[in-house]
Image (cartoon, rainbow, N blue to C red; front, side, top):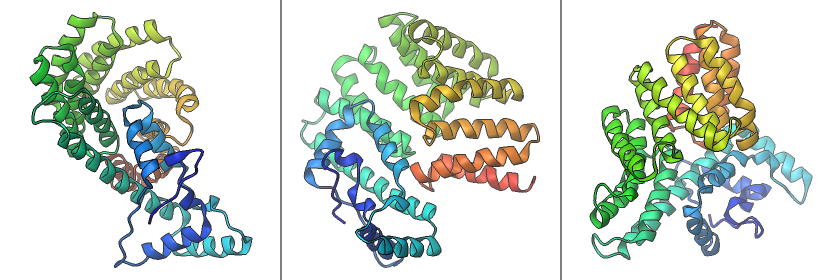
Length: 358
C-alpha cells in the first residue's frame, strides 16, 4: 500500500487510515493469511521522517501517530458506507484489535525504513572514519529502537556511534558518555545489570570530570543507575543515587517539571520494591497530573504510571481497582507498542495472574 499523507501534517497524519474504503481494503487484506500487507511512504514524507530523526521529540511524534489510530474516526462520502464497513470490522475483529493490526504494520514500516537509512548512512562513510552526522543519526535511531523494544537493533545503532567516537577521540573523551549511557540502557532492558552498571560508571566519571557534580546529564545517569540497583534489590544504593539525581533536577528545573517527576517515579519504584505500597502510591499520584499535562492521558508514560499504581493496589489486596488500572494500561500498550512488546506482554501476564484473585 502506498499511503498518502495530509499535506499540512506530513508523515504524522496517515490519510489512508482516515478513509473508510481504504480501511475496508486494509481489513480485507488482513483477513487473508496468504496476503502480505506492507506500508510504503511517498518520497517527500519519507525524507521528512528521516530528516527529523535527530529531533529529540521525534519518538514522541511517532508514538503520537500510533496512539491516535482509531478506525472509528474514518470518513466516507456516504454515511451508509461508513456504518456498514465499521459494522463488518467490529463484528469480525473489533475496533481495538484492528487498530493494533494497523499499528503493527506502521511499526514494521518504521523499523524497515530506519534500518535501510542506517545502512545507507554507513555506506557513505569510509570504513572506520568518524562522521558526526552518522554518529548523531545512529544515536537517535538507537533511542527509537530502544523505545520500540527492539534491543538488538538499538545495540547495533549505539555501537556504530561508540566505535566511531572512541576511535576518533579516545575512550575518556566527553563525547563517549552518551553512547556508553545509551548502551547501558539497552543492557538494563536485557537484564544484563552488571554490564549496564559498568557502562553507567564510565559515563558518570566522564560527565563529572567534564561538567561537574551538579550537571543534568549526571542526574540522568544517576537515575538510570538507581533503576538498575532497584532491579538488583539493592535499595539503599538505589535511594542514594536517586536522591542525588532529585536534588540536581529540583535545582535546575524546579519541583513540578516532568523531568523532575521522572526521578520521583524512580524513588516510588524503590519504595514499592521495599513493600512500602502506600508511600509508593502517594508518589505516583504526585506525578500523574504533571505527566498527564506533559504527555497526555493516552500516552505510554501514563500507561506506565497506571501499571505502577496497579501493583500497589494488588499488594494491598484491592484487586478490582488493580484490574481497572491494568486494563487501561494494556489498552495503551497494545495500541502504541504492539502486542509483542515486553511491556505489553508483562501487563497481559499480570492481568492473567490477577484474574485468579478476583
